[in-house]
Image (tube, rainbow, N blue to C red; front, side, top):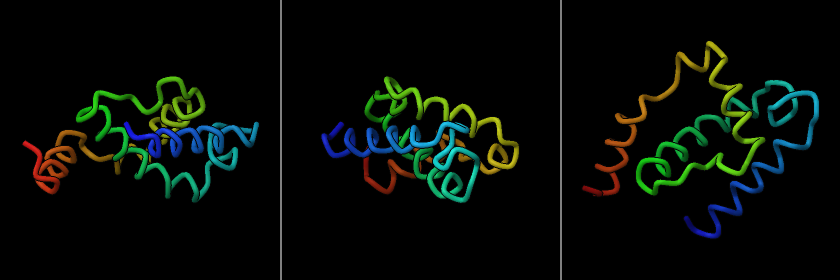
Length: 96
């Protein structure tokens, strides 16, 4: 994982700690979470399957955020199928 990617994830971890009234970016669930969750979902799938790296490991705020998002019913209905998304990324990146 590149230094830039690690730094970006560390910034996300720090941002998730700014508010104490909940696990989300602004404390309580908001549009910010809707915007970020899809990006983080794709990053997690990519790094866990192609780089063997768990983005939430050692980042308790990100781990809690992910767990809380996964309990929101409307989000669960829109989640990507990890292997389908991974296959599409591999085709796009021309990775065997």
